[in-house]
Image (cartoon, rainbow, N blue to C red; front, side):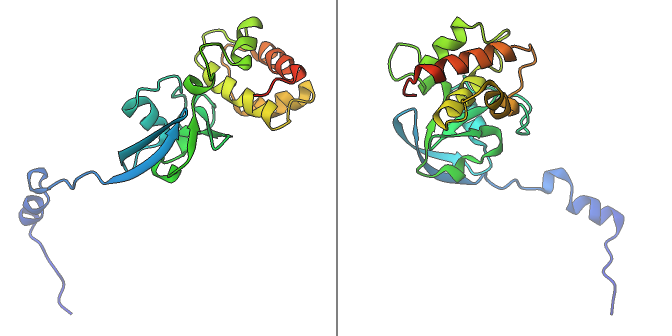
Length: 182
């Protein structure tokens, strides 16, 4: 069998950057309901829901943290369940309902969890706050806020570098005790 051989100069010319033609970025149609509004989009098939929200749709309340699903700063609700948006491709959310911190309150009045976070000073720098609040709402909604230990356990996937954990638990506990429909 004959071996294939390319002279070094031929190889370099064949794969020189000016000979490479980039392919178009693949686009996919995506229909989502975002904070109560139906959106029909055409998106880069490789974009995460986090980057779609922040960079394409200008919903910057959802924060970029580690982009590895470890810190929880990017937490949103997809179909009512808390989700780390940095780990989800946007196209995997066809016909899903997405709620971000911007859509949490149904009116101009703060959501009960947002109000409790303010009351209990459950934030310092504020960077993690939107993710903390979105997880806190899910914690109460899913019935995981029965005890302080249960709250701490549920919230352990959200990191606060400022250490406002005690105040966060206080805020969640207060909302859970009020029985507010969230």
